[in-house]
Each structure stands twice: as structure tokens, then as C-alpha cells.
Image (cartoon, rainbow, N blue to C red):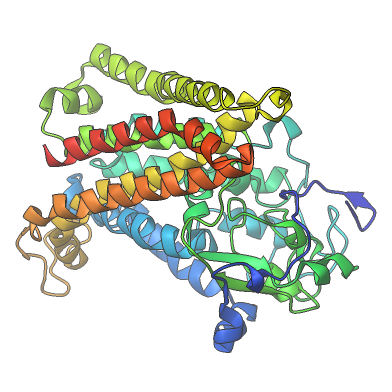
Length: 497
């Protein structure tokens, strides 16, 4: 579409026929129910009021990582990021808040400031296909890289050194410092949030699992968007910046690439954009191989993290923790298995299951109906969604023991954030005391069962759309259901011993 005489490529999903969002099952317009919430997000100081405190905390963490104790359990950076933040992200923000972390994330702050030369106010103008004044080179990101493959590989690279990252403050400092420098550099060179869209490894994680969330930002009525002549949600206005994620709200149908910065809410001249509460796992369509490979990677990493960080297998921990043990040959063997499992083995097993299911369902087709058999590409990508709810619940099951066993570190490190013997709030000597570790398995198993339930239920809904017949849909899912059940049982056995 052309905006202000210059073409920009929008990250959109092909629209369904125009409809009112509230007419979809289970949708509740939160702005209509809570007008104060709408007034809050329309303030020009939002989301800066969230980002700036987060940025201050971010720099405190970096200082603690550099000058504080090298012992992870005594350093606020390790305890807050890899225990508290990680659990809050997996257990609360993603399933109930979609990409709300992106709303307050400090990583793109400097890249945004370079482009806007402002933190709160809006600059009117005519830059890079928008109605705002922007600064920097404002180049267009290469089309060949407009996917999440870089995020996939980036997350896999970080996960390869997980044992080091979650125990060594300086390793986390280097990782976070590198990300903020990369974000600022890309903000200087390219228009909008290229870093968030295509590079940030955490963004790729959020992109996939935000599909399950009970929260969505959408236009209220697609007919209103269709008649709108300004497209201010994408192009910006004197009230809001052009969408940093390059999204036109009139065609947004999934949570994947909306960072919920709320600029579109401010810009929309028709007050047609709102937050909606919706049923769990409402987004059900993966769009490409990059997205389904993200699902493969995340599921394998959930198992890997659980084995290496929580399991009783000391030899495996030693292979992953190369910085402490120094066994580089063993470490590369560990990486080979990890990468092979994520990029080749699980996709191959999944492919065989899909192909067997297709063959079973095709045998039920009547003569002359061969043209209605879905292609392997469609089945491979569409059925990949079943890995999303299962993967999210596997990550949540992994995170439960982290918070239940290590919660006391949070209490003590608040008083002694640098591990220097301080006692700011009188809790520095709070004893380590796991919270009912005997309950952990009883929490993990229902979570995994919930993930399997939603995987199968949503998989059946997708199969009905693809096959158009319940019997063929069920037959096509049988091998995949066996695979998903086997994966679930493997997680259960690993978590419960």
C-alpha cells in the first residue's frame, strides 16, 4: 500500500471478511468495559511510564552483573532475570497478556530515540512513508530477511550456553549489553523496529506463544477500517507514531507480530482499536516454515533445559557447562545432539506422522475426490500449531520448580543485590527454603495434560477445515496425536522421575 507517496511493506495477515471483533466467540471489549484503561493507554506518557522504570532497573542489573558477586544466587541480575522475570513471562505475561512484555521492554529504547529524537512527544512530518518526522538512515530491511529465521537461530545459540548464562552474571551482562547495542545500531540504519521484528531472540519466543494468549489488540470493526482513508494506525498522525511493527490494524488477525505499543490506539481517528479478552489458543494458524521451526526449536529446548538444569544427570550438566568443566569435545557433542534434535530429528518425526495421517485420511476419499486432499505443505505447516500449546505448557512446567525451589533467593537478594554483605531491608539472611517441593509434580502433570488437550482440540478444528469431513480429519490426526502424546509422556517421566 502507498502512504505519503512512498511504499512500505506491512506485516499483515490476509484478512477474513469484515466483521466486528466482539461478534467472534468469547470476545470482550476491555476498553468498553473499563474506560479508564483506554484513557491510560491513550496518554502520550504511555508506555514510557513503563519503559523508563524498566530501563533504570536494566542498568542496575548490568551494574550488579559487572561489580556484584559472581555467584549467581547472590546476584540480583541472575535471580531477577532467570528466576522471577522468566517465571512471570511464561506463567503470566504470555498466556494472559500476549506481548505485553514488548510494551515495556527496555531493549529498543535507544533505537526508538535515535529515530524519533523523543521519548513522549510525537513529531509530525513526512519520513519513510509515515506522517511523522523520523531520523537516521531509515533504510528498508531486506525482504529475504523478513522472517523469524534469525530469531530462531539466535534463540538456539543463546540456549546452547544456557548453563553458563543462568549461573554467570558476566555472561548475562555480555548477552544483554550486546542486544541493546544491536537494537540501537539497527535503529540507526533501518526504519522502525527491525530489531524487534526480525532479530530479537526473545521476540521470536513471544511471537510464537502469544498465539495462545487470552488478550489481543484488534480493530473493533473491519468495515470501519475498510472505509478509513488515513490508515493512521500504520502511517501515524499528530497523535501517535506510525506503527513501529509496520502493521495495518485493519488486516491484523494474529498476535504474532504486534508489540502492543498502543500507538495505533492513539492514532486511530475513529476510536476503532481496542484490547479484547478472548478464549485461550484463539490464534490457530502458522504461516510459514520459519514459524513452525520455531515451534520445533522451542519444544526441544524445553526438554533440553529441563534435563540439563533440573534433571539428576550430572554428566549431562557437565557437558553443557563447558565454562566450568572445560570439556569442549563433550560440549560440542552436546550441541550437535541439541541442534540436530531441534532442526532435523523432531521435524523429521513430525513429517512422518503427518504423512502417515494424510495417507490414512486419503484412503477414505471417494473416487474422483483426489483434488480435495490437502497438500503436504499445508498439512505440515497448519498442523504445526499443535506444538504451540504443548510447548508453552512444557515451558511452564519447567518454570514451576524454578520459582518454587528458588523463591527464597528473591527475598534475600533484594536486601543484598550486589552480594556484598548488605542488608538494606533486613532480609539478606532469609533462609533458603523450597516451597512444598513435593507439590511440583502434581502441578506439572496437569499443565502438560492441558497442553496436550489444547493441542488435540485445536488440531481437530484445523483438520476439519483442511479435510471438510470429521472421519478423515480424525484419521489424519491419529499419528500426530500419538507423537504428541508420546512427547507429553516423555516430559512427565522426566519431571516426575
